[in-house]
Image 1 (tube, helix red, strand yellow):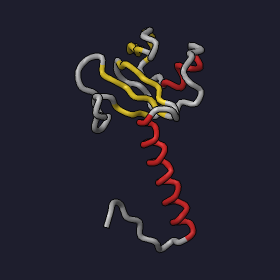
Image 2: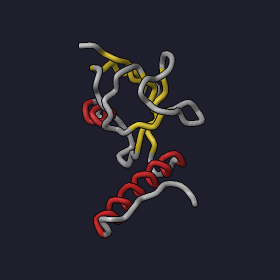
Image 3: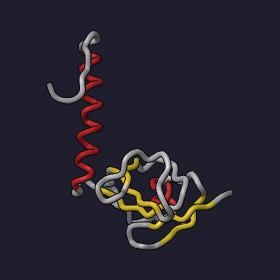
Image 4: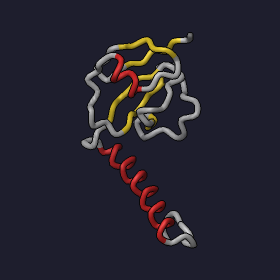
Length: 115
């Protein structure tokens, strides 16, 4: 099985099977990753990251803690205390609100942006 190198927030490096998640790492290695983790921000160890969308201003990419990791990465775990996690929380809340509105008003037309 192919392994990848994950650099944790404390600087330690774990060699794990490709496809491992940060959530699994927390359990397997009894890591001191914050229990209130909202999202992770990852950075490339070697060149650009594939299939991660657009990077944040600091070059990191936001990912879900359950996303299978496919390449060597440096990680940063974000909690509710981090400004970047507020964006993720608001984005998720917007999806929940839209689902609730659609449940109440099946013919509603959802829109994005400003008028």
